[in-house]
Length: 246
Image 1 (cartoon, rainbow, N blue to C red):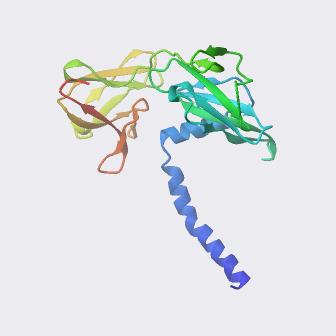
Image 2: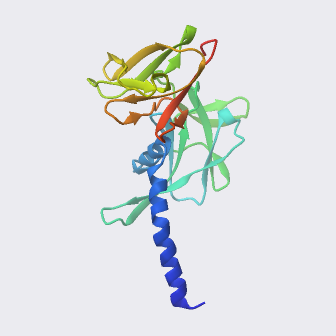
Image 3: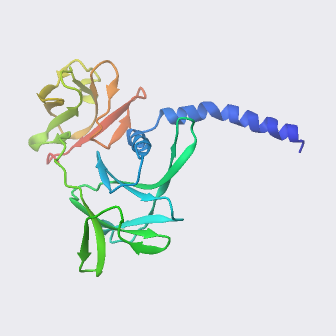
């Protein structure tokens, strides 16, 4: 095939794909955006640290492969670290860091783990907290991930739903959903502590869509992983109310 024709086809494909790439970027989930933000904040190798609902591990970039295995998975799975390149103001790579981001499992207060570096099991050299595991006869690294329980939307007894929103203090936060025919001016939430808003609403058993409002744009419930789309294509949160109120 003629070289000029090949280059022309490559150019046309790149131009045609640009809108699709922009669209894909526009519909990134909150979790994907949180992940990307956490990666950008990794600037050095350090002991594991908690950021929000995540535990971030780092390792020096002087090995070919770094992985990690966790006690809550019985060490059956080795999760590979990724590489984050650190750049200067001229966008030049000045250093690289291995990293792995773990979403902390629910009801887990401590995570024990071992690393795999170029095929060899080892404790985390960046983590001074270690413990001896009687079951495996090995030294494990560990991290305390116990945190205060973050208030979240939940179904209370007798079908009463407590909607919870966290944001800036002093806002007028409203609640709308399929139970109001998406009228967001019926229910205004109460600020029970600085930045914490609540509203209790009795609802019969069923599946409901809802969102919070501080203006005209709906805000999904970040503490609720169950998201959906309304008939008009807007993202919302979803909640199921059962007969037992669970």
